[in-house]
Image (cartoon, rainbow, N blue to C red; front, side, top):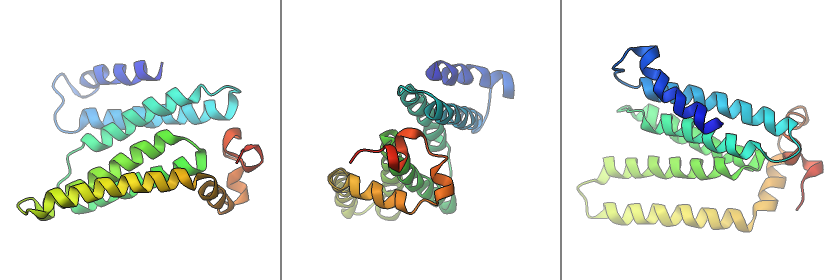
Length: 179
């Protein structure tokens, strides 16, 4: 259902912006629809006993992150905000215990670092090595996270204010979590 809503939004974009949308209209619609699907996933995560929210989180992140990533920006500040947003996704993954945020966040950080390396050393022989080192760094970080996941999640949740812990879905709350 989430995929169908996202796909339908891409067909409705010409109706909203005219028959030949110019610029980032499709990306803007994708970001908006993605946010809506993510909100629905969160509500479903709060209420459902079974994990039906996974699919909504997946397609919501595909729409939201895909729209953000596809937006063209030649400003360094906008690219930095994009990188920080992706780092935030990694934090959300730890708090909500949803790996989909981790995957998209890691891809976004890698995309930002790759773009940064391209813009600073595209004509250099160092570029392929820098790109390889960044890829290995992302892999090493993923392995380290997996190895220390329980400790990282416990520490992260210990730093969440108690008033916000009550807003977490039941599967992510400290009392209902398993090691």
